[in-house]
Length: 200
Length: 276
Image 1: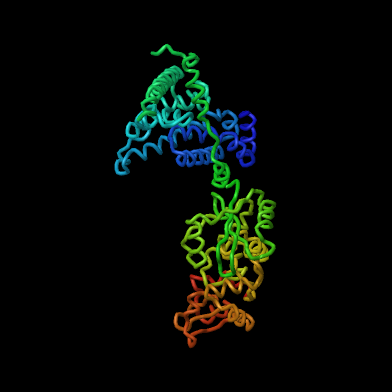
Image 2: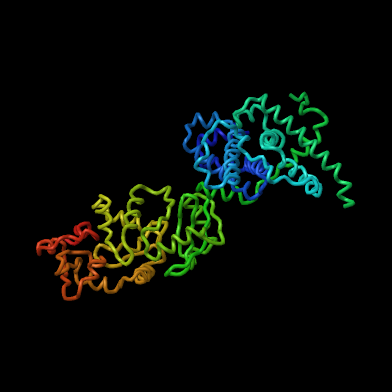
């Protein structure tokens, strides 16, 4: 599917770009939403990512466009923007000048751990179904949350994740497994807390 | 390292719950993205001296300005014509983006320093050169077509300049109304006809009747007896000359012969060919 799209993008970016938007907007919005948690931030970042993708494609040679792996490439743009947004939110403006640039720290290490926003179990218990899982996911440390979102919400392969996050597949597999274990444990804790909540 | 595999049945429920967290993008995401990259346009009304206008824009800049009161430009007709001629979808927005609206109001009020990006894709470099030159004409002043032609280095292309101005997609924002016939008469106007051109010029502080009266008597240039500088009649320097010191000339050559020098602001030399 993306091969046809890439071929069309390489031939006539302006004619084909709407196809890229329609094919990828849902997953890019979903990634941003599940990584950041805020729908308005997610919409802004998904749009910004698509605009950046357009501008990048406009500068690429035909062969480079054809060789792109669209799914991980677009996911990486969204995650970069999400990380920048999260960093800006977390750190006071006055320290931004001291902030090291490309500092060797991996992408998810720079996403906030959200320790400041941890919801008490009781608050998560009140949520149901998808809302509950979304809240539990939001509580995951970023180094697990990002790989879990890419693997199980977006459905990327480990090879695609490796391309998007520039990490070995083995590392990502371990992080996804750990993330799932944490999620299941957190979910069980919430379920156990339910009866007390009902009688409270 | 954990030996648990994601295919572990214990994790099936977690994986299914996570897969269900995929959501559709908000309905505005695609339209606003296409607008931002300039593959679609939006438009909204704004007031002007000649009544309401529709201003169309995208992420690259302003793409069209039309008279909203013109029956030929009712929303449906304008949208259809825009999509046919420009080849991009357009949709109505409740209002202009605040920064763009402020910038256009300032531009209409005569502030040349305000920056308004224009989306002039699909037009020739000659047309763009004409429109960018028209942007240099100050509010309350006019220049002949030949002046534009000379200033962009195409002195013989006077008719082509007129044609380019007639096809200006962003009238008022690019003030093609400040370009007049080379014989000094006001001339045609693309935004609803010559009546609108007079209205806009009058709103900018120029008296079109006075200008045409002067043109009919053959006066093309005005010199100052005190500064010995010769200007185009609408130049702000010429308009400050006291009546007793105003020296009319039929040609720039006549002024230069009389010992006057050409104004560096309105550069009457660029309009001199037609007056020779």
